[in-house]
Image (tube, rainbow, N blue to C red; front, side, top):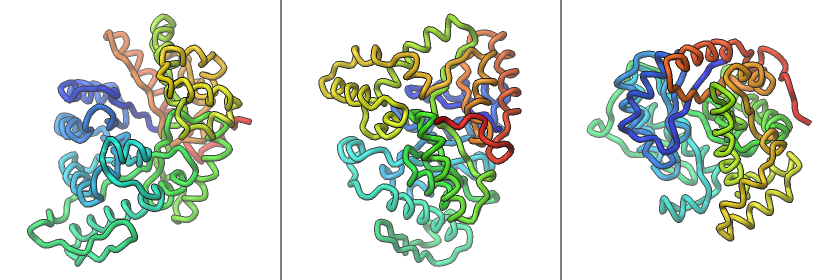
Length: 353
């Protein structure tokens, strides 16, 4: 099992180098930068410059906020600059954010993302081979380029692409036309096992791929700290995070399958009324357990194995390092997590009912 880490949602560009180099020294396989409060590509560039072997990527970049040509250009440059270590995690976001925050039109997201990825690959093919571009889809078109705009081939394979997914359609899409899937954290274990895992197999089959070769990451939150005291502090923030996502209709199928349909409806109403402070109180311990692993670092490998063995090919470990002892402890945890069998190596250890 590969082990990755994600930069903070509010993480500043000025801290990216220190964070990236620390995680390479700790032995992580990959580091990811999210597009939430910051642009991930600026931090990715710094990480590429100051690391040597660790894989780097976005988790995730918002696809429709940029044209597929622009995204292909970003990916091509970073793949070359990093020495072939890039993975582009792409997500669609939702209608409201596309139209009202990014100010771009909204359309059928899965069909559009399929063409988006196809066009990115068409751009890379033209740059690698010099062939005339001829991609025409319903949503995107690439039929014009010239030597002036073509950066030419690079000495590395095309960047990997993974698709962010909450539902089975994007899960299948990522496994068919991209290199895998990055599941959102707000997924109940039952929903992941019963709805999304079959979509992995469906997509891989349609794309003629072996699921073992795909990126399969995410699914569920991982709330962890070196000791019980710090874990209790993190749990309060985790309840607020789960409450925030659970108030969104996007995740209601997952919440319903976990048996919390009424709570999801209540959280949605409270969010509309801006009663944010009340929402975390609804997230009791059982609710948390349906969507998250809660563990100290010593407990984490066993609990991760219960949920991810035979399911994922990558897991995330968010190691908040405060002392040299924490760093050494984290290295031990990473090695134990790496020993968890990945997708296809064993049957899933715990399929939720």
